[in-house]
Length: 237
Length: 237
Image (tube, rainbow over all chains, first blue to last red; front, top):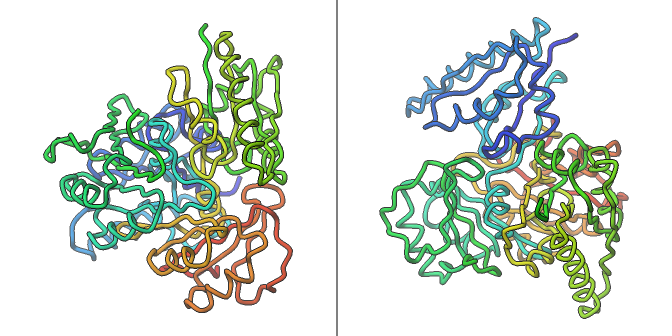
């Protein structure tokens, strides 16, 4: 059996929101690389997949520093890239997990940029956090001629206002630490009643706020908090 | 056992890209409502889920007219909504399938708008077509401070140009019949080398074009053809 690398999107949080394909592949892995270090997000990815792993699968947690020192980060990725390539060349079935979808706001892409697209690589897509939020809240994303923008709240004020102005549906990721500013923008644009916020969608700690106008600016938020805006839908239920 | 309705995203096409949760729920259904009529897309949804259905599951294909006669369409949705509600009230486990994710460019939302968000409804998210295209082509979507827009090519020229100008990553859905016009816009904006097109991602007929500049304007395309643009990535591999 020749070596393979599977980059696996784990889905948003609940273990059974992973794909059937990813679940099956996890059971065949010799080695699983699991990123660690980002405020609980990565250990979450490992907890999602644990029940699908084979008894013999070796788990290697790899740490990627959040430091601003770019050289240190580059080196951490280079090291993991070399380790993975070595395992594949030794004929191993290797996995790398990533929360949500593998190709959207995913650290996996730092590895992909180093690996290129070798024939021994398979990327398995996953359910995104915003699809899970839409499902759990019963607030749809966009339809027919509408458009959707997905923006990180770290993108800056101008990009956020533009996205809110130009699209029927907007997903604002990484609200953590920026709720007051985003709320002010939503109010100015008359969008508060079309916006809801969800934390830890599909996990036991899931919370949904449908009345952002009444929510205190300093409400403590979980790290995985996202706002979804749909101009043709009311957030109240 | 009290009646339940499950709105199930089937994922992009390959049967094993459905979620573990949706696969399990499909095996417990008394009745499955499967929309039919949109150029092969809906029979595709049914073909994806067939292997997971229980032996006793009754399949009801429901036809939604594409006619411009809005009253006729409204009535078709009202009728299916009434049928589903009746089945749930009779204590049945009822499913409604939708290609890709349940809440993004999905006809299911016409039913949701009629049903509201009753306690007997569960929506199960699915992998979107663009996540599948990114995975299959190894071209990522957006990262970190970048933004992504998802636009239907039916949205009109202005919306498409704005999306291409303002976002690092753009997904252009429903290219069918509009390739020449989109290609001209991509050329004007200097984006042709950052764009790839995929048809029928994850299905046996999957095709990927990485050199859109050389692709004839009148190339015959499958109905499910999508262009993905990533300004920080090259489409060539």
